[in-house]
Image 1: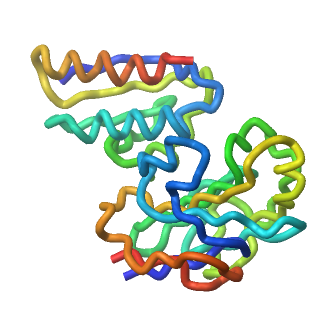
Image 2 (image 1 turned 60 degrees about the vertical axis):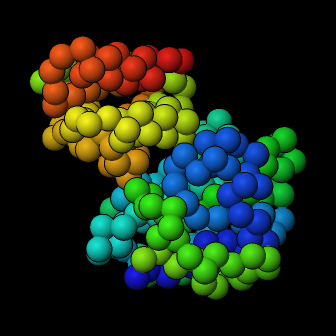
Length: 148
Length: 87
């Protein structure tokens, strides 16, 4: 069982609230999304493991059991080509849960006309394997959902 | 076994929508599907984790392999190739 932690502070709103059908329809996988607190912040690792993939706008952490969690910082933010994001770790690094990975400011993303909402997705997971999904306010490092 | 080399056309690469669509299409098929980029070891085409990890960008070429024969395997290969080649 993996407990997936909130990578950012804000309100857990569920994947259905993500303004991108790839996420809202669960095509990437089950999980939830956080509408982040506006202002400078640090997105952290939701589970302990290795940073398998690190883009400025998104990252995947894989635990020792092979489970991968995707954190996507805002929607359509790949188009920013890294602008407004600062990497605090490197691809291949081992991280503990809660360790900062990317510094960013959701307010800047929003000012640029994009949604800063952050999908947090269990990759290759069956929908029913994700339970205990928290709704409402979360702080960085709070439990967000369970993945069995 | 049928395989084809295709060039990733989407600006986002084989990520986001193209990646999710690819994996969903592959996962529904009764054949093993692998993808390899630039001569690297093939990865599981039914795993979103593996596809995101492969990190194929726009203009990268990848080889899609379907472990099956006959019209059904060909049809699947066509659909997967089309996903990769759609801008």
